[in-house]
Image (cartoon, rainbow, N blue to C red; front, side, top):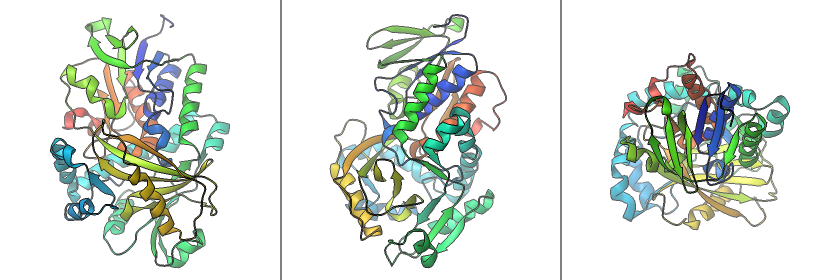
Length: 414
């Protein structure tokens, strides 16, 4: 480690942690990333790969309260809560429902828009031109809805509020993009400013390689406790193998963050929205543009390893075993949307989205702990919000103008 540079430890080697580490290393810090898993070993590996720079719609929307009982009663619904975990999750779920009021939705959308609008710009800053072209496809995204509902009207209203280009699609227009789509699907929305990555894993691995090439370090250890040492002495991290010190810490440990913050008296409403994917190799249809099926809570993304169906929400904590039926369900959903779809044997996966009730990440310096910075809670928007969040946190650490109002993402909002 270069002792002439300010020392920073970033906890977490997902998209948020590695983006933050790379911005800091390039701005003159000596950065060490600590994570027990190699880059893209957690949620950043298995997400849907969507980079939604022109998305400002939170997860909780008006009308969801009346839908929740039906979702919970439907074994194939987009939301399930494990009964044994329900009492623990209830406070978070109540905050989530409170965030679905339209007045609050609009406030949240403003903050999402401010953060997300530069997502592709930040990806270009982190990657060189060739890597960006290799890994990212700026071709837009399509959202579809089955049946009647007000959700598409809310999405259009938010798009209009922020000057986002959004094009309603009827059945004929959908079939121009997806010739094999089911004939009864007649309502969609094209967001041309969005993008996707052909491999979330390789994209995050690339960030790690760029960090090491810039002089940073990645250590395979598990952070067990953050110990403030006071003032300029910074912090000590107890890991499973060593004691490591730094002038400042960035906590980007996703759904496991509370294990590190609770001993410091920092309480945040963070829950894991367990998400699943089914990677279907050798599909017989080709999607030019990824799609989100809003009423079923999942998406379909063409990737270099096949067609990925990813999504749904399971509230069940960090310790419960995966329910593979949730991943198998995604294959059935995909074949409902594309009745002629055939693929090789699917590969199933489950991961932990780090989610706040209001869909906004927690970014900035921790209250009462100078030098301890927070960067987590991106929920469904990690690949979108990770790089601009990293740029924001890097600017705050360096004492630079943040570029956007950082207040909406502060942990103090709770």
